[in-house]
Amino acid sequence: MSGRSHRQSDPSILTPGVSQVLRQLGICVGVAAALATVFTAWTPASLRPGELVEQLAAAADRAGSGSPTSAANGGNAEADQHLKVGIVAGHSGLNKYTGLPDPGAVCADGLTELDVNAKIADLVVSGMEAAGIEADLLQEFDTRLTGYRAIALVSIHADACVPINDQATGYKVAAALDTSVPDRAQRLVTCLADRYAQATDLAYRPGSITRDMTEYHSFYEIHNQTPAAIIETGFLYLDRDFLSQHPDKAARGIAEGILCYINNEPATLPGEGEGP
Ligand SMILES: [Zn+2]
Image (cartoon, rainbow, N blue to C red):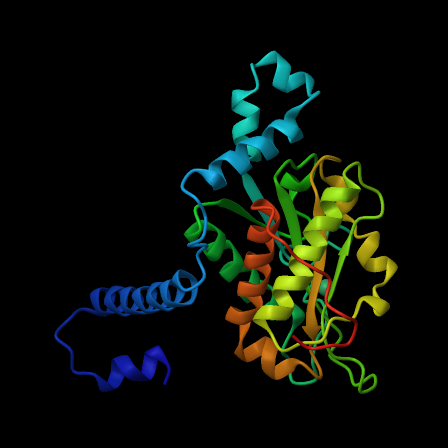
């Protein structure tokens, strides 16, 4: 039911403005409660108190070493900026080259990759914050990406919404080819792939990783000490039900992957084409 028809049929004594605010509050509370349910279940209870902070500080130290700015200001102000992760909602914002909105892959009925990416990215950011880690929600061509420094950057995308073949299902994760921190970027990939497999029923498809992924434009914009990965969360055609109905599971896999990386938890790359 639309808000307009509701208002017409409801002989409420509240002014439209107040009832609208109440309705929005109701919606907000509902979303917050749902998020709390989703994310409290997997906040890392095994974490020793202070361990996460130690890891973050160590990561920030490594990221900040050798930086002239860091040396000039004693390191504190800049180090603080590294105690966070960056989450790119793929295709959000205006395309830098066309100046136009960019929906990414589009399904015949209008469902877009941007819809799916944005929902998952929002949930990942909420999950990181629920775990006590600051997270920046970034647009595809966000100006903040230039020289971006963080513990990790993850860009969230989904694959084509056209029938290709019966193998066009599953997810991929790739690191930048051109990075100064290949070991850390690979660890991030391993953690993301492992935890995404655990959180979803999707198959891992490393064999079909493309240059679009490994040479993803943001990888060249960010600071070369920021480990970065791009995840294709599934194919919009064959994995549509999962992507549109379970963005929480996809987000959980990604957020747990980032936590795995930050906490240096054990992880292994799933076998190709295998489910969890
Ligand atoms: Zn995309």
